Image (cartoon, rainbow, N blue to C red; front, top):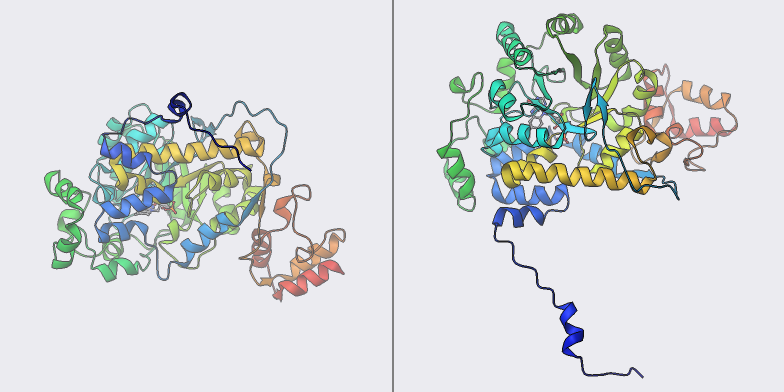
Length: 469
Ligand SMILES: Cc1cc2nc3c(=O)[nH]c(=O)nc-3n(C[C@H](O)[C@H](O)[C@H](O)COP(=O)(O)O)c2cc1C
């Protein structure tokens, strides 16, 4: 029988701690976001459908993006216990200069259309956090204004080679003159991917006022007030364009660019050169031989070739083979600091976030981007400490097991031969990889890379049987 008593006022007093209400609505809104997905939901409420869908969408059936996110979800972390993790260092050097966190802001086009502060918010927030900001060739803020917003931090310029080459190289020269330290050369847009959401929404650059957009604008007045009362969107060819983004890209971009052109571009740039959009180990090898400083394993956030390889699955093999020759960076699908830590563990020196940044921007301008960096940074630091490491250098493949949901069904005979040569190794079908056995030995990426060398494919089951033999 429970003994009851009348509560005393002095017992209740410590329980009654009413917090003063937060009067700043934006701060209240952003503080309520605990994850990047929360920022996304706020962004969706505040941004017209066409601009939000342009940001969130990917190409065709959006399978590349779904798979990339699934690959991050399908990992297992393997922590070590009883380590002193009272301090943690989330920074190191990337391309010869320090970064406070192992991620930076990816280049994105038309950014002021998502939220009027655009690149100024991104560059300012990146500078304050000690991480690099990347400005797209299709950016909506002048190179010099980005430099002014992030005068002491690191700015990277992303190049798309246009048919009008002198015009794109003039931008490169301006970026160099403004002290941008890295050139990201994006190579995965020979032609535009099919962004079906944009077609369906009738989304054009600049946005058109139709009956549909006006109705959609009614619950989102702030976006429209901002849009109509600030400088019109401007970038290289915007004033003479009216059409979808895909049509714009196809009209501007040069589909003839080759490795020789890349060599020429590299010779024009005084700083570091990173090639963004690498999707197989053979191309990565060619780029290492060409002497680039880094590559970004990326499928452009799933916005180009749908069903493209998952960058996170390519990572371990590329890092193992080429990580000592150049830096391996990665993007596509990152929505959490845990995704970033897993990437570093498997060999990425650096990662880029595209949509995570834009969700923050759309949710609250500069403060929204600050919040995005804070959320990812806290997740990076917490994940590292829970794994039992104090620094990024300590992260290694044994900290991550890639679980096998998206393994290619076809495995090369070479895999069989390799498996036969190591009779002690058990089949993944019978025994999952453990930290001790080395996570990177049992995973889709290995099978994918081996499959690339295949002469005559066999099924994974056959390979596994051979491994057991
Ligand atoms: C709205 C949007 C615009 C983009 N514009 C560019 C661009 O102009 N140049 C470029 O190299 N990549 C561009 N990207 C790709 C990003 O740089 C990056 O590769 C991608 O967003 C990473 O995937 P995530 O969005 O899942 O983080 C864009 C991505 C988005 C979402």
